[in-house]
Amino acid sequence: MNCVIKIGNITAPNLTSGSIVKISPYTAGPDMAWSFVVSTLEIGSIRGSGSNNNITGLHLLPNSSYSGATLSLNKIFVREISNCQKGLYLEASQNIVSNWIECLTISSCKYAVRLDSTGGTIRGNQINAGFFDGSAISNDYGAYLSAGNNNTFTLTSLGGYDPGKTL
Image (cartoon, rainbow, N blue to C red; front, side, top):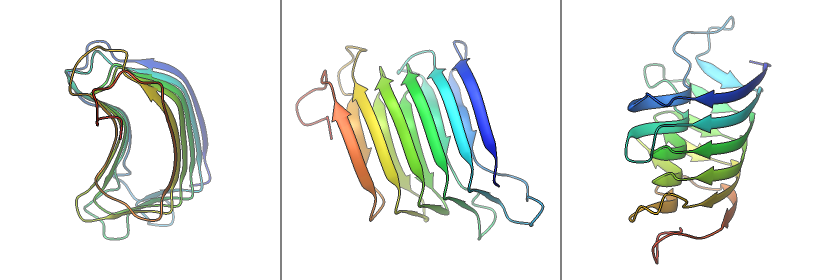
């Protein structure tokens, strides 16, 4: 907690499954909490090997093994995510609460932004993202939001999606 992490460009051209960047604490910190809180993460770009693979660009997933696990009060900024199945993926097995997340450009991903819950809460987050489908693959989605409440979204689509699949 209380970390500032700055990373340049991350490419994973040979990765065929998994997450390129995954925020999911699996060990307790000095305060014995399994959390990522009050931190800043900045990433230049995240590039996968293609939207047909099972790759996630930026994956936020609290540890489901610990009941108090949380990802909260963070600032996460990514300039670009491309060529992944899921660009920005929030998967709540525990709590993802009150984060500020911004991705300037998400492109060539089957799901640019996706929120899912497997028993946790996605609440009170500010999510800003610009996305477009540059892959020319049908059945891509801009934002797929199947979970969460009281989140604020600023989503900008530059098009390229099939009718009804931008949001």
